[in-house]
Amino acid sequence: MPVISKIEQYFTETGKIKPYADKVADYCEVISIVIPANGLQTIFLPQNSMLDNSTLQAIEVVSSSEQFYGNLPDGTTAENLDIADFNEFGFTLSIDSEEIAKTPFTSMSRPTQSGKFYFLNSVPGRHRIGDSFITQVGTGSFNGKVITMRFWYDKD
Amino acid sequence: MNNIIVKQSQLVTATLNGTPTVNRRYKFDDIPNLSRNNIILYGIEAYSADQLVSTDDGSDVIASADSLGITVTLKDNQNNEFIYQMPYYNLIRSNNGGFVILLEPKIINLTDCYVQINNTLGLADGDKAVFNFYYDFV
Image (cartoon, rainbow over all chains, first blue to last red; front, side, top):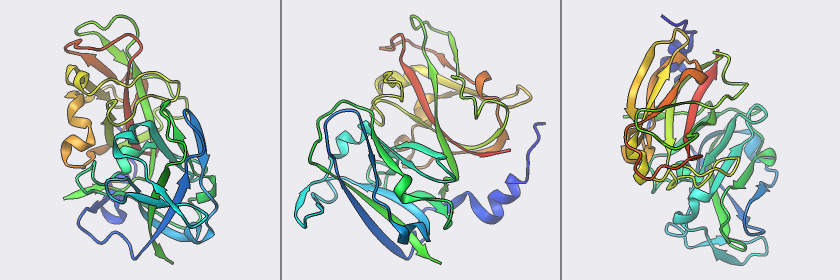
């Protein structure tokens, strides 16, 4: 039999699984990013020390079919990215210097996953929002549209 | 029902090099920091082009319709095929009501794992089968 570390104990006691119907988190923060160009690109998230100092419980990406408009920095709004275009984007969350690597947006879209969240349970110190980034892997033209991300977190 | 909590994850690929042929096996691509029998896999998710259009190097991800023609086999560090010819389609999360396939945590031998073509459908040379591995280091 292969050698198995204490991960099984860890699996059950501290959890790599979570009942999907449980409360996700106490708080929710929204980060909106305007897509600056068309085609292949990398877009870094703005630094957010409040999230860096909180326990991240889940991430979700919001499409125009859930919330038509996202917020722009100048207080106006623009259309959110369509759910049909999510397959052109991935998100890399900087955890322990980049270990959740390029998760496709479709994995973090709740309507795509029958309402299920993308659970993280990342404690303060592991993640750094300002080092996280979005990658467009397709060549589509989405300049000016907004990517709205919801970060579900607990204060420590 | 439970769903996965992601501790660490990485996209892993298997490249269909050459003309796709029935029964041909394609080993997973080498990823140096994951392929030294140093990860314990506890969850896996597969993607078609409906979920991700292309990989890091710009290769096409296999089309949704073509995912029906591929199976996946995972080997542990003792060379046991603990997942043997599971349909690729079954590993696509949205086909399972949003649940990620959870596995008994096992140390895997990444470059001995493979995908196999059961029907070539519209598969083409250079297409990639793409997975998200949810893992911990040993």
